[in-house]
Image (cartoon, rainbow, N blue to C red; front, side, top):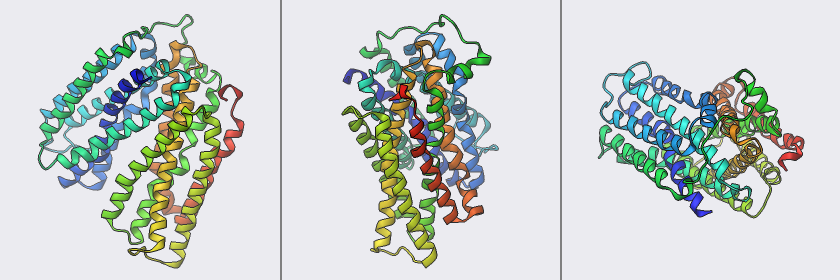
Length: 412
């Protein structure tokens, strides 16, 4: 199993680099250059290619080999980073960046999204059912580590490394990863993709994918399982800031602490799944714990708002608030790893010629669910008020617990 997990870990780590670059490093660099928060926020439009993975997933299914897709997409990411090194930002465009640089960053996301489709399909085809738990732990943990390295790690190097040197470092990392993919023993025997015996017509592709056993239920679950958690995790740190926790301390707990707890939760999920715990049974337990944690968080917020208490140093409420923050990230990591395992198990049940498209559909819906509430959370808090907003998040977190009772027997 180690022969399979090591190349997967390396590839998922480099796949997390573009996300960390644009969520952690790029906003700070743009803000430091005096751009408004609105223009910094416009840079998120560069994530657009991730929402259209279903456009090229059928090509990964039917053209060439997974190894070729991985090598070419990873090498292309290195090429784009090399071009970015030659074009340091000067005059800003509508997104806060020069048009050429913004276009290259859009290509960077396109390459990463293509690599994501090929890499997820590789994991679906390479891992045995008993290896899905450890495999998805590697996926989630390595991706998060890559995002942290590109966000916080490169940000720490900004005072000593210029824009060209930063992107040359990233380019070298991608080219090294492409070379390792080409030479990895576990990837030498992968079958080439080819047209299925009964190719699906494009107009009916979505309908046919949803007709696969367990797919419709899984699609509904991945679209909704993070709604309440994502909304609460977006707003709760800001509410703590309003109640007296310093920006520096909140950055430590919501940054480093949250990532560490999330990684611990993902690793715990993998360990439990490796002990032959079924994903659905594990989700039933963990989702109840997550619901209880969010209920405690909502109660704490209610107490803070009604009593007007400030979270001063060395207070019990301060400790409870920070503990609640970390607990939700730990449970969130556990839920994510278990859900990704369930997604791969569902995709392994469809014909090999459709697995890239099938998993791409589930992954796109999972991303849409997270982006939806994360984007609207602030507007909901402004319109409904904090307490009603968190009560709504609590109700949303209860939905997946009830939805699990409708799970088809094919996924058990």
